Image (tube, rainbow, N blue to C red; front, side, top):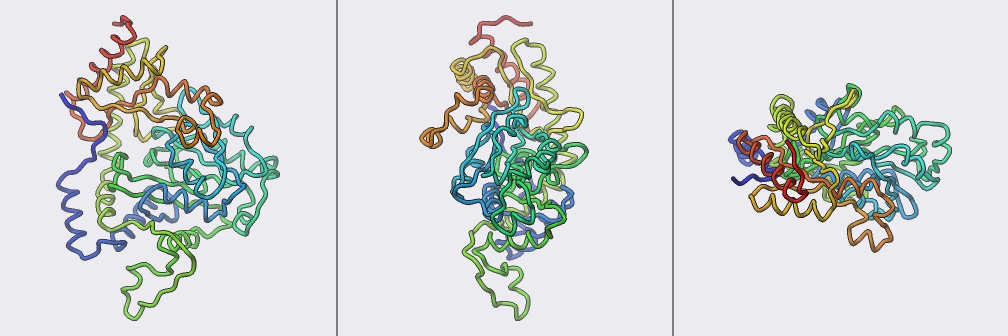
Length: 409
């Protein structure tokens, strides 16, 4: 039985929505993108949202807007996809990695404190697997007199905030909640991903949620981001359709990061059914995995809910107790032979060639390596059928049993 890892939900509603967009004549940024932004703002509980062609674009725009430059430092967890670090490098700044919690893979706040210097401009927490980080503690930290004292403002925007900015990488966590609030309004700026394998997809895409304090006008900042995302142009294609409103100006050398109406059409449908269909189905799958694997002493189950947190159930990162990296790879190979697609999230950034060459070493992050070496991400997607789910469970258990030569009930 063949089981894919995370195929998108492409049904007739999606096909009809895209067809409608194509027939409308708006295939670049237009009314559907604007509507998607408005509905995302309502869903996440923020004043304003800007949709882009990727979450990576959103992260880089945020750093550049805040004035992150050569010589600055940006703190992030070592356990993330390379995109989180790459945007820092693009800005000429230094990625400062912090080890993670052993239980939930998220940034360790106590260790984070140790890495703050007068060069620190931004902290970028990453909600691994869909579980939010400890934002109460992080926001209290950056707002404390002691940490504010470290902060060195070097432009008007930094002076206006007067502290380290918290930029949430929520690529995994749309729909998750923390202390009763939805992801999107937990940090100063939050960036969401709509990549093909994400819970809520637009094929490719991302969004920035604006939640800056009252010293900022979030709508004004949204407009600045919009200009930066479209070559520095002060009017988008939709605005220029107003009678006599064709004239535009380029006010800076911006980027080409805008979202199109074609992909926004997918997002509108996915968002409409996200809470009552997508999240519920993903929770069912995770619950089924938990019930099955809880019987095995070698299984370390992921945290998907606590007193203050609810995951978006983006990943099911199963860990195998007392398993080496080599054994984990052998387990994955055996599972693959049964045509079940699994994955590993993630290879910690210092293990990647580019970052090794920059002098980073995984030896400095023992918890991240320990989590990585024994982790296997199992399939979680809306159309995963019950017999496929059962087959995945059996296949994984058999592979672990054979490779580790354990006996279990």
